[in-house]
Length: 318
Image (cartoon, rainbow, N blue to C red; front, side):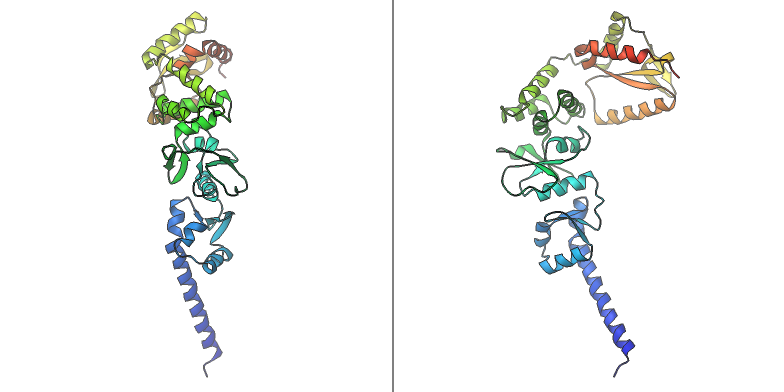
């Protein structure tokens, strides 16, 4: 008869081998899905890959999977980033769901992420808790995109949806960012509006597009010239022009106020957006704040711009 220690060692070895096979099964089956979805998987995805109820139960009890919504799990932990939370909400909302409204705007980079997460879908089912599900009668395929694997409304459709739930200023900001990042043009927005002519906020978005169409579209040099005329006409202090600060040249400088002005024309793109923000931080480190002047401000909101500049330029540099 073998010694008890031999029996125990044999039993432990068998258990370890079983656990090892289980981990390999998890890594081979679940991890590839989660890696493509910011750490999130769904019940439907697991069963389609042969995971049975018993195995799924063990994944849950052993802490490999953590429930987020009904039928949606995070892998190993629930410290998900915004994209993980977004895709979890979409998966929990049904096969025909996609990210929408303010959440879609955040994914496209038009606004900051906020709660609750918003999703749109065209048909039935029980909405997941803590997710704002919008119903729609029409969600054409051309209005749904995949961004980093997350189903989301197109930028045009996102702006149409956004127009019905945010303020005029927030809509204008989102529209401006979308244009600056070259994510959408006015034609695409109008096409999206034509598919939803009676949608709440549609009139406001049409007005915004029409106003943009009437802008002059000044070049950077034209904007600089017009801005100097704008300052002169309103008796605002004239700045130094094309001045070196650190190792960079700035468009305008009010030295005693510690203020830099930069001309931002409509000819804008993501690389310059990033570079300009880096410049602003460099200048702030040298003790200068930056205001960015757009052709819209000078041409369409001159009195608002003048009022704000008077307040800023009344301050002395510390």
